[in-house]
Length: 221
Image: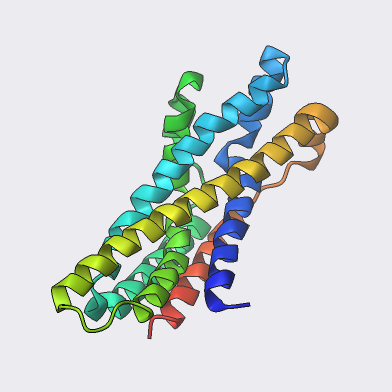
């Protein structure tokens, strides 16, 4: 398995991990299905949740992807990004409570809720080290012999496209994982299962942020 393939698989795995986390919204899909008493309502809810998540990933990734086009800064950018992810993970370990503002958003604004929830949990930041690794591999295979600024512009645009693909693949994996668990709870397990087997991934989430940031810092130099 090549390094590039491993990084793309990591993007998909993180998406599935985010989808399984109740904080990313699959319980809302279950609640919508139970409220309307039809299975289609479960699927319909996940679309705005996925759209909001995609927006949050893009907002977090695109600035770093744009900066990664400047090769002379790449190591500093990757190291800084890794440190930011570590610090945010430590903050979530110390302060794991969810922002109260998320509880005040109306049910008709699910995409906005999903965007804010993913941003507040640092879901996009977790992807930054992986995305920068993909951009670095692209830069190593970039064109040779062209004018310096032409190469910078080409690699910058290539990094932006890579960031969008990372956000899209990650969100697709998140939606599929969220749909699977929401459908299982709605169709087979029911609310009684949630009361008996509710799981809290906040600590695991914060720890994974620290691990992802540390990996980004280790590979930056």
